[in-house]
Length: 348
Image (cartoon, rainbow, N blue to C red; front, side):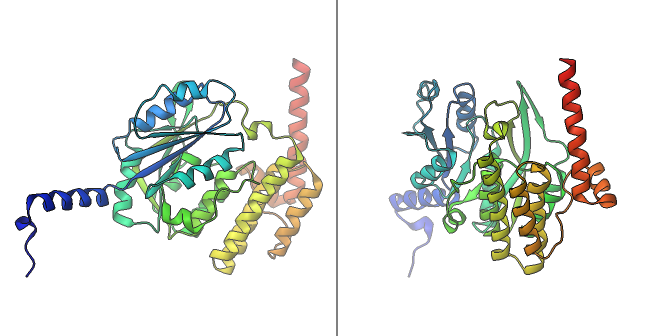
């Protein structure tokens, strides 16, 4: 006959309660790639160490920084920090390196200039304990401009539990409103079911990666008290050096990956509709750069069964596209943009 828990010897009771506590408090791995981030990395690490949820390991992967990032990182002595220095290989490689070293049940990716609210991870862990490892966990996003923190406006359509296809419809239907890297908390089980960060993606690598993880999940659980901030005024990001054909090719590739994922994981009608929306983001935002890539994009849209891209832009652009077609609306928008730049140059 088994004995009740209270009848167990004290040593066994102690071991049992310790094991139960571990099970109820999963280890969270925070992965931070760092490249020339001496100005921001101190605040980013401090926000991780200030989490009310303390069962963390913080993997800092220095991607060959040439500034004083390492000296700033070495100011911290917390035992939860694990520091790695690797040759410069890009943020996707650094994140994949971090995944290989991670031992947590949950993973928080973080850019080296992001800030976590003190309750960010704890609130998401509570939801994870309720819903499990087939879901991904979101929250409320804000930004930092200068030294001022502010919550993003117009993001309330994200602030609820979302089914997989519903999430992508919401994302593509709301012009320019995307969650960025630090918003998510991901179960390691879902990460292991997808291949890692794609090193061929130079821009939108976070969108491409998280789209794959979400497509392998059963949906998104919204965590109201989980707040994350990204910086709006960081110089020298890839998106701010958005000029070369290589970057445009990589950007189109990222949206082609969306299409592939939709076809694999969703029903045919949803996959076709969302695939067109994804490719239309590239087409409308990259026009008129590199006509051969635009033609490639348009051909992929036709292969989905549509004659033209969808209108992706602000309300006035969508209205004009309904009247005269997307390509004509893009020509007018391009002409107006050139005129504004010429006028601004003349005033200087």
